[in-house]
Length: 552
Image (cartoon, rainbow, N blue to C red; front, side, top):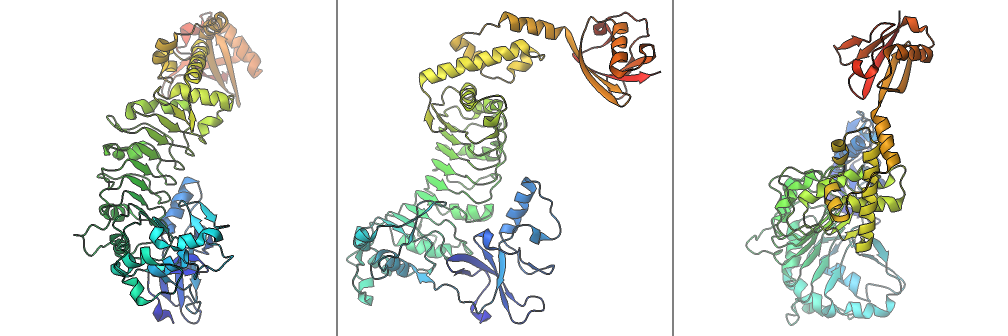
């Protein structure tokens, strides 16, 4: 029975797709087993281990290890503690019956193969699945394949394709009647009207099979192969570019490495829209494999840590849309000279952008940005500000060219109010911060630009007084005698008075207090004697000092 299976064979059981990774005995058990890796990792029991011995490896093993690293999980030699996607099953368990491409068409689009009351699934995207309900009234129309322009064959267990002539003849000519062999070779209906094809989540193993189908559909421009596991990327007749007409390609969850992805994309020279989430990509190599024709690229649900990690994409001259939601992006700085020349839309939702100041790096690399999505980042959870204030802060930090934020259009009045409110916050920070003006404005790159637009806000007198007072105080951390005290003391306070205060704070005799200013690893200065009346500011440099307290 095991002889009918092979390594890397695609199977499905009760509709769940898997790949054969091992055939043979397992431990002391009798008979042979199949070691399979499930596409749905939640179905797995382990990572190819049994009683401490590894029998096969799963493609998801490295993914699990990386996620464990990201979330701080402790890895041990017991790899099985990482959620795996593998299982052992007996060869005697019968897999689902596969279909050919034509059989899939008949099953999906003819009434003979779709009994009343049975509802199939329509996959509209790689991640959203809906159920057909109430389609009985139009099923006859769907069965007229000569009217179809879009074919959805996702999740139908297709593992092989028919010849080109059969596909061309069948696509437009099949109806609800019985079929004969002559129907398949009727050349009067060359299948030229099909424009979109979805064969996601099937059991096809060779790119050559997909190429054959595409070559039979000359008007095809949209292809979805999400969730397939391709064991071979070779295309036999490279002189006949089966994919040259494809302008939209979806490759979500195909789990190819960069070499494989480069080989795949080299066969799609005219792709303008590429959708590739769920592929565990973390950096873009140089040179990158993406065609220069790209205008829209979706790399959501990957593991990119920064905008710098995708900076190689700046060489794409026509890229206008870049979707990077659900990654691990925390910084937006890019190497000097990096410019995305045509980028107008950027989606960074569900990342880990920490502060609004992070957004200040965008204008230099994205000068034409008009639409931005940054919702569900930590910066919107900043303590002490409401969501409305966070929205205004985002507008204040983003370049003025951004007209749409988080799918909401920014009106001119809203922008003006947000920028003026943002200026007032910066002015308050300037008036109260102990940092220098230069240090404060370094955190607010648009200060100068906004002051030219709206005028520099005045600093309130009370705030100015607070700043003057802050400038006259010194933050002092006193450590010693198993105690630590932090105080702000006037820089004009005499050292003798400071010594008396320290005695009170540490509950020791002021005459026994010895103060040592710690200025560095090898630099320590004793601050005068008991009668020293010099001012603290003349004896200690800086606004923040650390003093060691000793009892002598």
